[in-house]
Amino acid sequence: MSLEMRNLCERCETTPLPQDSPARICSHECTFCVPCSDAMQNVCPNCGGELVARPRRVSSPAG
Image (cartoon, rainbow, N blue to C red):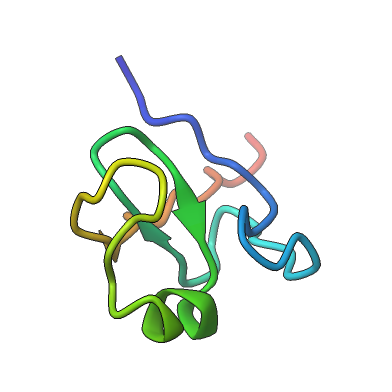
């Protein structure tokens, strides 16, 4: 099972989060931009869990 890669910050709802951009995510896949995560002291407002760096998913080159 892979992570749901959300493409917009759930807090500010204005910062786009492409798959290769830095973002923060909790164990429930709540996703935030780095400035919002910093403002929330890396604590998810939805579940109280820790926000950590979201792994980047790099597209494979066209074959």
